[in-house]
Length: 79
Image 1 (cartoon, rainbow, N blue to C red):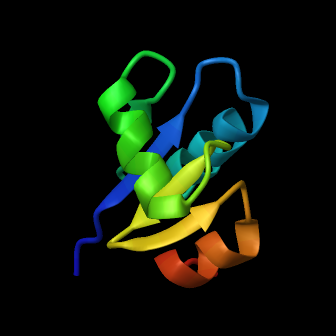
Image 2 (image 1 turned 30 degrees about the vertical axis):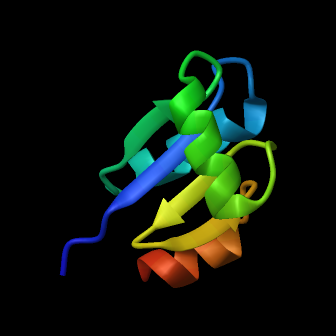
Image 3 (image 1 turned 135 degrees about the vertical axis):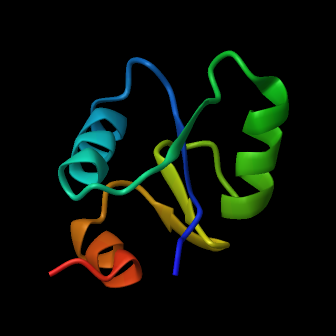
């Protein structure tokens, strides 16, 4: 089953870079949303996560805040 993965990021965030590298390394397709230049996306991210910190990862509606490798592995079914 194909999962929908969105990651809300900013260009200067080191944890966002780590998260994207982790997803790429595990061949996970994702949509990168830059909230520094997209106010609408920033609002959407805040509604989903309750905060403005990045990265915020949305995996089929499940929200993970920050680069949490264990949670990402669990949600994405990665060993």
